[in-house]
Length: 119
Image (cartoon, rainbow, N blue to C red; front, side):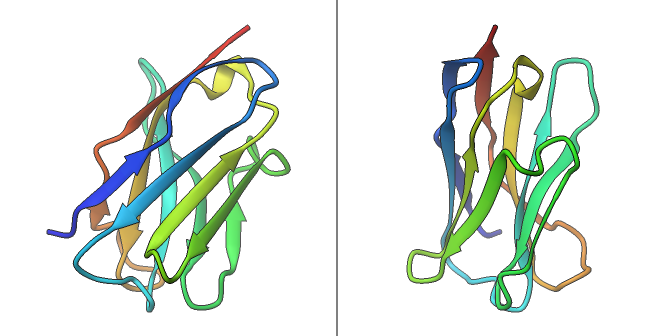
C-alpha cells in the first residue's frame, strides 16, 4: 500500500478559502493521476477534481469548477486542492485518491480530512 496523507481541513465561514494537501510516499504516480473526492453526511462519495500527473491536465466537478483549483508539486510528490469561495454545501470529508494509470481505478486513498463551512 502507498500511504496517502491528506491534511488541511478545518472549520471556516462561507466565502473563506482552504488548501488541502495530499502527500504520497513510497512511489510516484507519474503515469497516472491523483485527485480529490468528498463525502457529505448521508450522501455518496463524489468526485471533486483530478490532475493527470505528467501532463497536468486538470478536470473538475461542475459544482466546484471556477472555485477550486487542483495542482501538484512533482518534487514533493504532493497534490493540492485550493478551495475558494467556500459554500456550506462544500461541507464534507475530503479524500485524496491516486490511480497508477490514466483511466484506471482509484486504487489508493487517504484517510480523509474534514471540511466544515458555516453559513
